[in-house]
Image: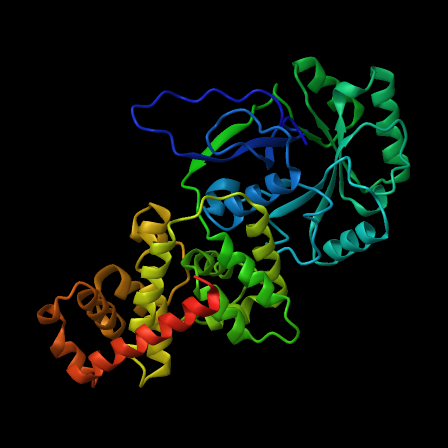
Length: 423
């Protein structure tokens, strides 16, 4: 785990409170000292010392979620591959991320057995690049070597003669493997590794890890656990998975952000969670849910979750006569609370999601048929009956009596969801 346990980089002073730390990012260079990749390193969100004992599973899960399912991945990666440490427990044959963006870095203490071999073979078949971290062996007999693309040699471990020897051994037995010299502290270290014939270089001499800040996305753990339970039911349907995700808006946001990555090619924008679930597939959603369960995140108040769900149910019932409109209305109602969940501007959050234009317009401006239903739900919640956009509702064929009946159905639907979810 390259330089994860070392001292923290200094942060610039600021008049404003520093946002949470998402992870640290350390550059990796080629022989010409061109930037070719980054390694993402776990850091506590408060910027404090590493927790002891250190939980590698939680660290991996938190880094993956913060990088791939929260922020602007293009800004983080600058278009370069991202190295992330994996433990035996967090290795998966169905990682819900783009193979071209992620280098799976195997920690030095992973026990090699048939299960690990099979997982690595599957990851290779899916196109992932595999790297073996902190290599400190005297020869090229490690069982992972036939399966990896990159070996990270722990430079300080070797004598000058020993380092030259292991580079020669790797070149002889595995000529296609790229050799990365890590933990380089001086110009002399870099010069020697270049002379030995290494391909890639990383260390404090070249660049120290830089903290990447942002707003940590919070997720309700109960909703995640219920989603995992649903995903593990035999012959689970897309509808059942969608229903489980509906219980927590943050789950839906993460799901849609995955849909927004290049690996999920689609011809149309997303109009429902059901559509997103069908596009991603059960296995990758299970992987995402497992990562969420492993990562340590604060829960938002239960009451906030209930308010969002209640509004979503009302929006859906208002459009009960039009199934397509009802699905869009539900997402609009659910995501209308995004600012409260994430403590970030709604415009910024909506811009990161592959939502249908009608949903985006409804959330930002209350325009269009979906926006009419969302505004109606908000006015109704506040008891402002006279401010409900009645003329716009009539254009949708919705009468005052329909609104009252929809409200009653929404209350019943909410009670059923609360009972089923144990809320």
